[in-house]
Length: 461
Ligand code: ADP
Image 1 (cartoon, rainbow, N blue to C red):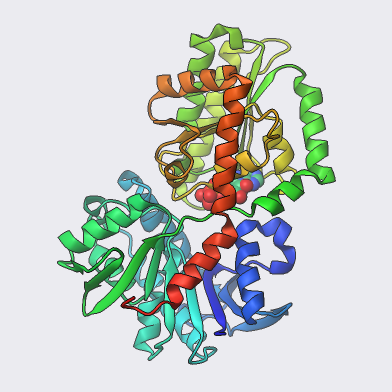
Image 2: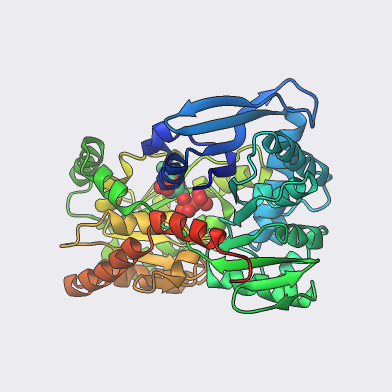
């Protein structure tokens, strides 16, 4: 069996898997079974000059080797805050208006990918299988190939791939897409992403599609497939039976009594549609006054990328909006919106989800959205809550038994929320049973096995 090498921007320590979440659990499972290597940025800033990066630090976690390197301040700012999170993230989430396309961060992005490739190449054996993750590292395989690495290399894009015309707004779009052809397999979250890839390479790359998932362009061939990520259902449900989750549930029940709780759990990110969600909740209170005194929206927004300007503005907007709604609609003994700018510990999350009659998962665009899956996994099958899910989340392709909504349509989201609050038990159970069956079928272990299986297949299978 070949050794698996995982490369991602950050490396999660598998020994702290409860904190790290399902992805770390699934990847460490694959890494452990092959005696693998996980390579990435340490999260530390070094004093080194840009492009130099401190030396690679190796540590052991069970049968897995963790290999991390520090980045210089300049490299971190240009690669991570700059090109990855101020160009690729906004454009890939359809927010051209927020993309800092004029900035000179491309050099930093290339420099760090080259640095990663150089440091990683020195650690590779000829029959290793390499699995690269996400938009931070699109050109990594091309850099590795330039150093003579001929190993099998796969790439998984965790965020959406935009349609060709949006992609084309990035000045380096051709270079980015050409870089994908240095991989043997590219995995996407949804069929929509695969369709965007296919259209791009036909329209812009004059590539030939040969067979279902096989594309030829730029003198190389690549396979591209939809392999949607799941959660570790069993692990998440086990967390739900733990002390912290049960205490969370008891606290919320004591606080809210017979009131219906609607929950939103997100990173504070403009892709999550948070202002639209709060407006839809305000519309719910306006259009369905029976919710007065009876319904509470608990929105938890975890601080994220606070050094990027667009995020600070969003925070201020949300604080103002929730204040307005409480001022307009609240009463002495009832605060309709509880807005928390914080992270809830992973061990308590299932208790929060389980106490909520409805979850609003309404991103404007999302590669997958794991909160939708976690919410379903945490429900009591005998009396489950209802998921209201944006049709623009990758999860919507699989979770068709949720109430699917257009998150820009405030009236429609308010209506769907009211329907969710009033949904009879029979219907809730049927929808939940189907959603949960889907989560089990395509959980994170399936995702990991499927990707590695596909990567191991011969190129012209
Ligand atoms: P993204 O990767 O864009 O943040 P996902 O929904 O796919 O979105 O994954 C988010 C992960 O982070 C989930 O596992 C979720 O439980 C966790 N998470 C998001 N927001 C919070 C929060 N406020 N507190 C704790 N965990 C959170």
